[in-house]
Image (cartoon, rainbow, N blue to C red; front, side):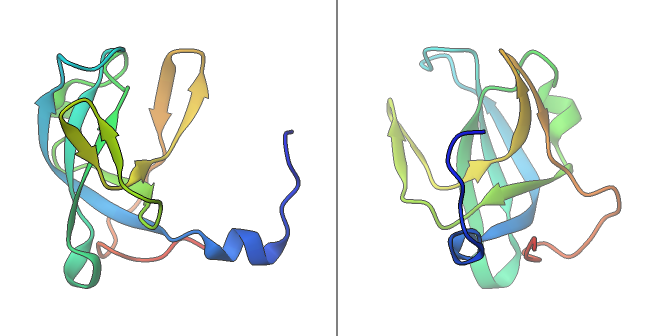
Length: 112
């Protein structure tokens, strides 16, 4: 474990449920990745993210999948692409498994 956080630090994170509505190849990325467009509901709206998940997922697998992402990090420029949120997953070297909801829920719901 790296750094211990307190509850106040954890509460600063805005982790939300969103549905992937569009997936594009991202050939300019240093490591294989997709460009995701994610719907976080009416309060947050649509955000984009880059995710290195090509080893386990196809573009077709991802459309309609509900994922968990941090939506209040600063935007990050990745090549010509601006990532607006951080999609969460479990990581085993270069194999990433997305964190998802096992039931469909309303987009934008907060993770606590």
